[in-house]
Image 1 (cartoon, rainbow, N blue to C red):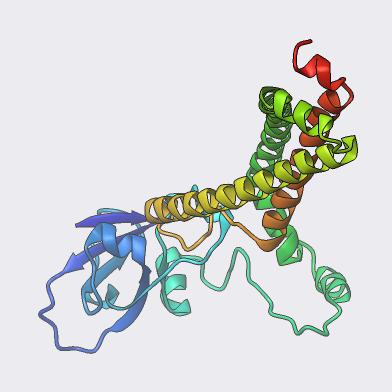
Image 2: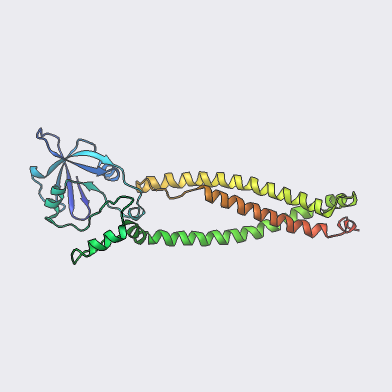
Length: 276
């Protein structure tokens, strides 16, 4: 079985008939699942697919690792194999050259000064913050996020109009009850307050149901796409601030709709509400 890796590496599954200790490699779980690899399998690695691999190129799968939650790798179909550095140099033919490397810093480090000093050492390479690289590689996700935000604003505006219409119709159906309360001596403010309180309770219950549905939908979305892309990345996240904003917005819209619907009727004379 031959599997191309990162456009230059070929991995061939061999029979486990050698007792000579071999060097180990680690493969990601997506690659292991696609190639039916298990820990302990013997492989031969070569620079190009289909090229001959000697016994010196034989390795053993020592570990199967899970990919990190990196948004820039979600849409890429690359498989990953972790080799020893000298193995990678020999197979790739790079020698002592590298494309890029990472430097870990402490929390108290002056990163801006470190970048400036690194860039001043030699010509031909540039140092960047990992955060800046993540932003550049996540442009697509930013566009999608803005698109979803625009859809959310349109949905909120449309639902507000729909909610107001529903409240006006529901309150209009109770015009006789409201007229009876008015004739019994109940003040306009008391009637309006009762309608607003009822609308607020309905808004809170609707928000709770919406949060529950959103949480279930988020679980389904994460489970579905994490299985497809073999990544622990969370595609849908419901946080406390999001829930608080949704509930607050629903409560405000419900109160506004109830107030608008109630004022329309309490300002109408009771006998007119009875149709007289």
